[in-house]
Length: 105
Image (cartoon, rainbow, N blue to C red; front, side, top):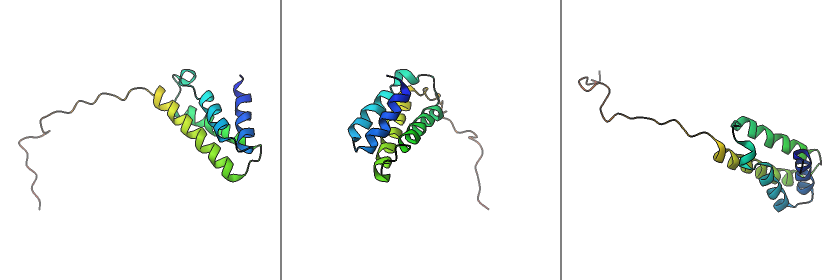
């Protein structure tokens, strides 16, 4: 299924109050295998474009908010699965300046 067609269907589903359909389509759009190597900004931008596309179908504001929440949630769930591992931090068990004592004036 073409990505643009899937985005358009999110808008139609949002208009018709089919939140479960929006959820399934969002999960289809944000499959982690398709987003490996992408930045969080790229994934979020795609969610926003999807929401703007859905907005063009003029759903009621509450339905649009629900669709937006679903799209952003799916995008962030995708990011959590594809983001790079955080750097390892080495914390020394020794204080930085063991002989230096701070005095209050």
